[in-house]
Length: 96
Ligand SMILES: [Ca+2]
Ligand SMILES: [Ca+2]
Image (cartoon, rainbow, N blue to C red; front, side, top):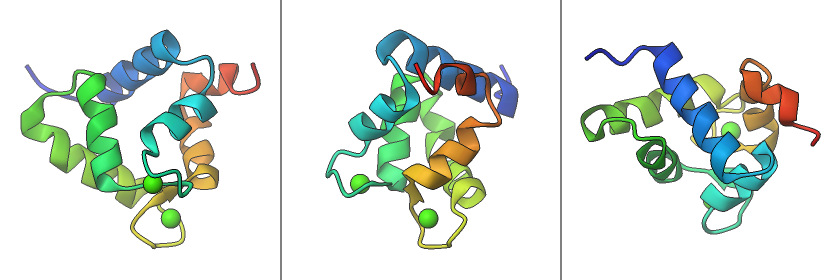
């Protein structure tokens, strides 16, 4: 079974929809230490719950940070996360 970017996004979307009422709640939940930033480990936890294969989790987490991290600090802030969400179906529930 191949994991495409679309499939991974689909899994994350369905996780966020089923477990949280909006993306901010999801962000705060995975931001375990509450510093307003998601690290690679935080993304790995999210991907685990999104049932993404353990084999590729590390790589996908790395890829997500690299693609979302605009200011290059190696973590993803809420602002950066929102930009990423705008590219998915989750933007529709952003304000709910
Ligand atoms: Ca954090
Ligand atoms: Ca950043």
